[in-house]
Image 1 (cartoon, rainbow, N blue to C red):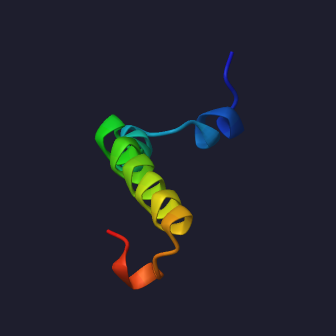
Image 2 (tube, one colour):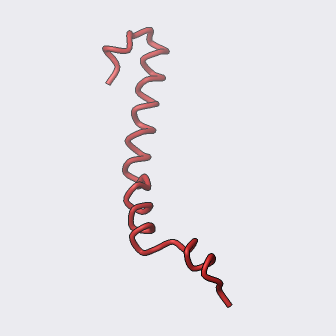
Length: 53
């Protein structure tokens, strides 16, 4: 049986919603990867940071 401490340490629905809203989506990850790839291509071509993107 759960003790008072166990219950106090359980995640609430609000905690879970907050974590879910902070998670990166597949779209976020894809955009990040695209940006990294652009940066790598820029480095290979010798472009300054300001010209990459």
